[in-house]
Image 1: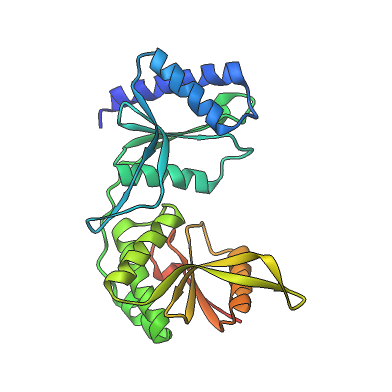
Image 2: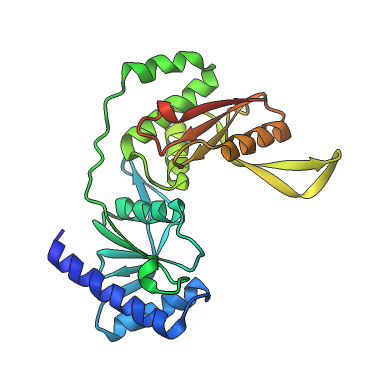
Length: 266
């Protein structure tokens, strides 16, 4: 990482984005800003690529999570472009995920749906190297509280968290967790569709459970500041719709995986 060169490059990109925003204004689709910014960068002689696919590598295996970076500048600066009312934590997690997966030390999150573009720019430096901690006695001892199917998925989740750490998108953790379960030969169903009944009659729409272990334990992987009531309410609703007695919420955005586990019981 050359701090001086990266600062100069990010400054040039921000200047180009300001020009795009000055001409186009807010409240357009993201694709319009992406096209205009790419065109401006090219005019300035700054190399860039749009919609760059980014596979996630977990334990040497490439997992396709469907990630695509809006623009990569000079093959070292990822840009995540938004046109939203407010930048949320999930947007910053998206950029952080791209930085970690692609080994980009610096990244820019640019929200064009603002009055002044400087209000919509987030610059993130990711220079930390995640060092997997050793499995603690507390983690191992915590497994005694779970039934065999739940304990198996918790152990797999602890392994995933040890390897990629907190702060990334929930889809990253789900992909890695599924891979971990496969290598352990634990049966699971991903993105299970559930019929929705209202007044005992089915609706045309369906609900979805991200993961079901051995047909017994629904699992809801999240990446949030904390497990909030909305997460618990969602899990409880899916348990009732699927006829399960219990399930697990796994918050991978915790300092330790054990602190991010919540058992949900109907």
